[in-house]
Every structure is written in structure tokens, then in C-alpha cells.
Image 1 (tube, one colour):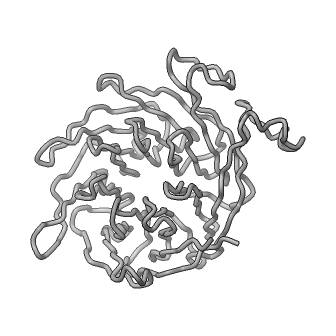
Image 2 (image 1 turned 120 degrees about the vertical axis):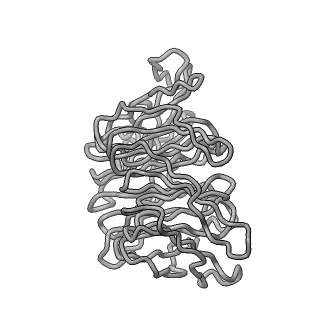
Image 3 (image 1 turned 180 degrees about the vertical axis):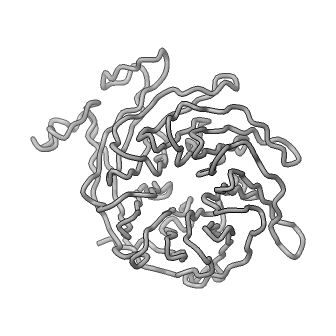
Length: 361
């Protein structure tokens, strides 16, 4: 049976860990905390993944909790989003010190910055806030950032933003129980779809490796999988906007978590979904889709489980770790982004610790 084994526990933060994120190409992890710092952790021995060290502590850039941290796609910059309503941009000095310097501070949000995300090209940065807005920034030369658009269609606190893995398409999740999809029309950003279905705050979202599905995690203790249906799709799903795809819920996973789900990560290496939250448990799921031609072989129970689009996505619980951070809430889970160490999962919790897990098949 597949299971997660703990490789290492990384201790150093003096308050809860809010977010853990992997460098796009190297075995380096960035974590941020209520202690107003970011820590950079590196595996010291490629042959022994249980050995890690903290190589840098980024401090002095924010006056309050750092809620979110994200690497640029080329790994040269790090963005930090803070409860002080600002976003910091950090670069590593090329000299021997290897220290990180805050080279830009983005201001504009009226309240706590909750999440930040770089587009795949690295040309755009998205930020979201308790002020109910999503901002799209264009990355310019000499560490200048220009605000291209302020998106204000959410009616409550925006908890998270996530970019499509290949397209300039943005998803945002909110305290208003919805997910919104944002697209660009000649630098004019607009909401192309609003995903309704969760019964409470949507805390986290992540795209599937293909970008054609999104997984969402909510305070209603469920995960949902949403699928994109283009115009003229074989399922006959109506697409209200001319030429625009529409997103529909194709699976709901409930009864697995006993409290709020705060974080979800869809592996780009092996396709497993990891989720974690206030029940101190990490869970792994596999999502598989029954093709239309296989419908004749579905059981009556599966037929009844068919959702509105007529697509059956089955989610199978693969593994779990209870009390993964003792009795503490788990705020973040993140799969390693490539196949090199695709079986590594990082987690961060209210106990102030960061843990590295390995999937054993």
C-alpha cells in the first residue's frame, strides 16, 4: 500500500508556518511564518534526503505575519505576501554571501495580502487580499512592477490565487464560497466564469498537470474537482459565453476530513492530490476519469454518481497521515514540482515546524 514516510523535520520558525513552496528546479524549500520571516531550506546531501539545513533567513521586509511565499518560474526571485498589506520581491545576491535582499515592495492593497502567484512565463504576478480584490501586476525591468488590473468581483476576503500551468489564466478562491476564473483581453482582465458549489469558504485551489481541471479545498470539509468544457464539447455542456469554455464540478470528496481543509496540492509529477487542514491529517487522493465510451460498463451506483456534465471522476483515497503535525492545524502542503523528487511532499503547521515526506509506492 502507498504511504507517506517522514524524511525530515525542519525547526527554526518561532510562530506558525503558513506556507511552504518548492524552488521550481532545485531541492530548495521556502517557508513563511507568523514570525515575519521567510526561511530557505536546502537538502545538504542528494543521496540522503533526511539531511536539511536552513541556508537563509529573510527578515526585515515586513512588519506583520508573512502569509504567502512564491518563487518566480526561473527561481531567481521570491515574492512574499504579508498581513501588512504589502508584497515583497526578494533576490539572492550573486556574491559569496548568498544573502537575499528585498528589491521591491508592492503597495496598493488596503488590507492583509493573503496569497501571491507568478504566471508560468514569469511576466505577471497576481496578489489577493482581505480587501476582496485581486491585483494583476506586470513584471518590468529593473524590478519595477506595474499594476495592470484591479479585479473586484469577489464579495469577501480572497484567500488564494493560482495560475494555469501553461496559459495566462488565473483562478481565485474566496470567503464568499466561490472560485472565479480570470482571463485577459488585450490587457483588460475580466471574470470569465464563477464556480458555485462549496457551502463555505474556499481556502485553497490548484490546477491539474494538464490545466483542464482545478481542485478546491473548503471550510465545508470537502474537496471539489472542476473540469473545463470548451464550446462544442462531446458532452453537450452548454457554454453561455460565445467562444468561452465553462467550468463544471465533476467530483466532490466529502467525509474524509473532519474539519476545515486549508491546503491542497495536485502533483505535476504523478497526479496525486494532497490535502490537509484543521484535523491535523494529510490525505492523498487519486482522481481518475471514466471516458464516455466506458459508461456502458459503469455500475448502477456509478451511474447515479454521474454529475451534471455526465463525466464520472472517481476519487480514491490512497494514503493518510494522522497527527502529521501533532495536535496542530496544517496550513500548507506542497508536492515537489517535477519528477526529479516528485515523491517529496512538504507540510507546514501551527506547531511552527516544516516536515518533508516521501511517497512510498
